[in-house]
Amino acid sequence: MTPTNTPNTTPMFAAPVLYDGDAEPQRLEGRRIAIIGYGSQGHAHARNLADRGMDVRVGLREGSRSWAAAEAAGLRVMSVAAAAAEADAIMMLAPDTEQQRIYDRDIAPSMRPGTTLWFAHGFNVHFNLIAPPDGVDVALIAPKSPGHRVREVFTQGGGVPGLIAVAQDASGAAREDALAYAWAIGCTRAGVIETSFAEETETDLFGEQAVLCGGVSALVKAGFDTLVEAGYRPEMAYFECLHELKLIVDLMYQGGLNYMRYSVSDTAEYGDYIAGPRIVTAQTKEAMRQLLANIRSGEFAKTWVAENDVGRPHFTAARLADADHPIEQVGVRLRALMPFLDARVVRPDMGVANLAGVSLADRSAVATAT
Image (cartoon, rainbow, N blue to C red; front, side):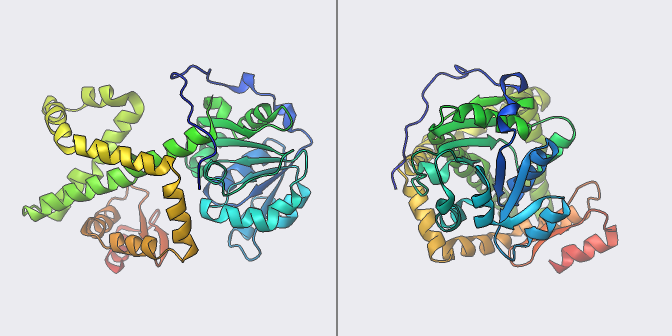
């Protein structure tokens, strides 16, 4: 499973940031667009396109729980195969691990010269899981935000930043069409940067593993465990190692590391300088390089696909084990007592419960039950 193209090595911001005025929305006029999937990204793309007056339909598997939700939003819903057959532009927004099966069974038969195939993540194309035929445009339009924010910000008149890339340009206008699609879902309101399938896929996977999900989760748990093992109350450990993390990340989001350090106390800033290098050591950096090498070689993709093919045993075991970590147990109880939070309770075997609008007494009952 060898990647198909090499990373973009151009200097930072060598390519311009593209906005509404750079797009040609008229390129999508008369196009029959199919959105495959109606999850986090799918619902946002479909509804934003519909609000822009585009001819959009949603392709779902028969019996999908999302079918009724999409119809309730005023969208045309049909099977994936029917949507692909009807459309001349298809956006793949099903989960990464399901896209190859969906494509091979339901979409490939409708691939004909002049069709456009879009993705919001380059995983399946970059790692050769999906190989569209010649004569088909293949491009990427990737909002840098969860789908609910893509929709929420769009309805407020704004947009979230996005990326575009082209893997196959049969028509000679794949880039222009991708930028028009980025306009349609609101990304050009905030700014769009051109990239490659390789760069988007590899940096996205690395960020998730080394920092945003794997790195942060492990760091938070290790800090919590260290305090509790030293005799401190779990509630205090939770506040110091998880709850306050949002406050720090919000500062970084607004003004980078410099603004965060400007905003915290001098004591906290000094602790940052002397402790950070002891936590993220040369050994940590080497582990990050190994993670990146594993991603770039295609080994991670191969392992993840194989894990799915046998029913996700390791994935499921890890999810269930972490669901019962003490930081999760104390966190559920504490968040239930914070009416200012849009608190959610998640159990892998039970789904998600939203505590918004639930009384304080009932919140406590929910927290105790979980």
